[in-house]
Image 1 (spheres, one colour):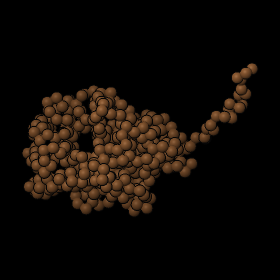
Image 2: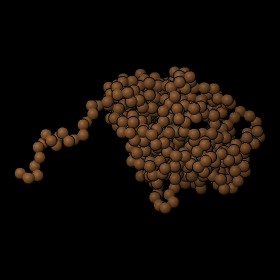
Image 3: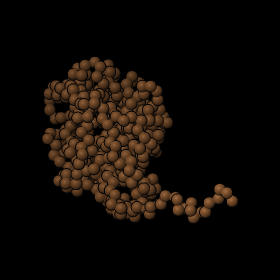
Image 4: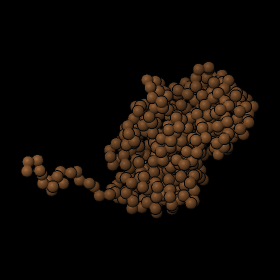
Amino acid sequence: MVGLFEPHQFLQDLPQVRCSMKITKVISHVLQYDLPEQLGYSQQYYSKRTAHLVEVETDEGITGWGECFGPGNVAIANKTIVEQVIQPLILGDDPMDRDVIWHKVYNLLRDHGQKGMPLQSLSGVDIALWDIAGKVAGLPLHKLIGGAHRKSIPVYGYGMMLRQEPLDNLISRFEEEAVSIRDMGFLATKMKVGLGVKADIRLAEAVRKGLGDEFPFMVDANHCYTTSDAFTVGRALEDLDVYWFEEPIAPEDHDGYRELRTGLNINISGGEAEFNRWGWRALLESRGLSIAQPEVCALGGISEYLRVLALCHSHFTPVVNHVWGSAIAVATNMHLLAAMPPLPGGLHPWEPMLEFDTTDNKFRDELLLHPLNIQDQVKKDKGRVSVPEGPGLGVEPDRSFIQHYAIA
């Protein structure tokens, strides 16, 4: 009959399906070096910079890179979870089955921690699996997610870390450093607080004095205040036209966040210490955040980040990712920010920003064979950076650099 065809011919014309790839090894690289000067935030002072990279190898020679959030001894503990707990669960699995792998690992670890270090460890593995998927497809991460809503990303620079020196010296330092960050080309800046209510207000006043009336700046408390003290500081920050007040109180205090958001005329931000979609559901339903700050290297990796992003947007809460760590973390966030849909849409939509630590960080600036050169891009492109276009994360670490700084 006319129009019929032989079945075997149809099958021959189909593209050939490859045999499944297999995960053969999962390696943690914990890197560390001594900072040129001690830095601090409201919880501690530190003198070493740490990064925790995860490398997933396959039987087809394709390697993926990820990163786990967590400094110092936390990174060393997470290395054990990655290599001794997660690796045995996923050896032999197809790395393209990243959602299957995510749920298998999470479900088997659920009795031992739905938050914290198990999720930080899973995050690094999951990011590496997405890197592999991009390399198999020959596509950058933002294409795998669904495409770039923006080809370049605005960047804010944070600095103004606490130091163990007289308050008057620190006030002068904060004012000068704020001006320096502005003059580097960043579109906004962020400072730390945590010395106490009166001292913190003086520091914020110095930053506003240095920047002038128009330049945006934010204040990060790293959950150091009681709710009543946060109200006192927050009212002072209102007068200084601060853009957001980050993690003013303990992350567990959802009611306190809602009270602050209701009672202050300032954006309340937070979420870097929250994990997975279930934790984020409760946080968002409390209506305590003006701006959500998920940390992809901690909350469960890219797979879980995308679910959390959907939750944030379903609650009409804009997102500015928390970014801390090496060039792997920075590159991952560049793709995620590029792929983030505008909320709301329009001719001039609100845009997410890339967070950039302006303090000394060799693991961001010198790790890659081809550096991201964020600072140079910011200076040349009016505070914006271009999204990597290579397959996967679009970056490749220098193995000799890793070997030089590895401590575990």
